[in-house]
Image 1: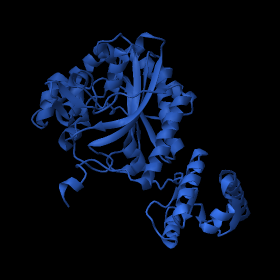
Image 2: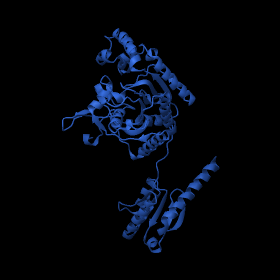
Image 3: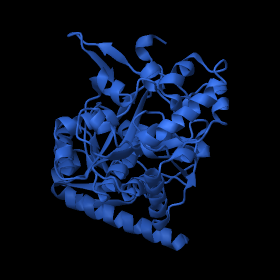
Image 4: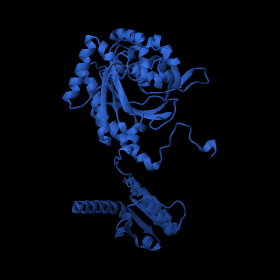
Length: 436
């Protein structure tokens, strides 16, 4: 197949047969975020490269290996966003959101771009749902954000998911932890990959997140950050756990979680599942109290999470989760003859104006082919329009499932279809009850 007819490696098409699942999932995400007071924000798909260098961290795999960076025609270095937090923080600073009433709660859905090896649950273009909360330092905020993520996952139908939490401390208590890591990894320096050898002096915590099999094996026996927390960070972490317990949210403390981006502080968390293979993390997030000031804004605490929608959809598929079916065509109007085509157009426009999905022939097909098409698209009702129907002003509304026909007045088609749909729904409900 010609390259022009192939999607770019690491990208994926969402076809009409699946798009309704995405629409349901995305609507659920935004609706639940709204219950917690989070309002949608939309930021550009590309930013000045420095936005990600300063926020994500120049020792991370994302910045070192995975960003799509290019110079525009003005010679400016721009980067397709590898994640959304940095762009949202930039917007909050530029538009003054953090200087108004706090906390500021925002949510988003958008595409992200990372150059990495495509595999199940990991693409070069992927989509994230996420939330960011600016101005709240309390452990209650951490628990609230975690509860929001959990409610999204359970509402869309995830059956088995585990919450893992950790604290990676603040810049002060991480100083002693970094020294412990340097001492440990220095004894294995000949075994580390070249990237991790560079990280050893600059940011040894990044070695814990290396994807190299050898480095990962070495990292398993490294000191854990939770043993080096200062008193304030210990107290904050205990508070997070108590709030989770008060909410009835089960968790496991996993001291190996550090997350893959440099801006995190204190609480980090992941929702993981064993039903999506190696890419087990569906949602990850935590605190990043120093990021806003690091990017030139006020010293405002912040936290949030990102949820991979592709991974979530893969998880739902692997767990055989039933999702709401796609909306069916309410009525297909099949015209026979030129005059009938004009009437069909008028009737369809009237029906659409009342909120019905109505379709008619736009391919100049015969009646048999039209009815075959109506059946294929799952039309609930159909109406054949010919000279007799035009002359009498009446037609027969056919239930495509039962075959039952009801005579209706054409100029009263909206009310007739509304009543027919109500009767059809009641009949189906009665049948369902009788089968129990």
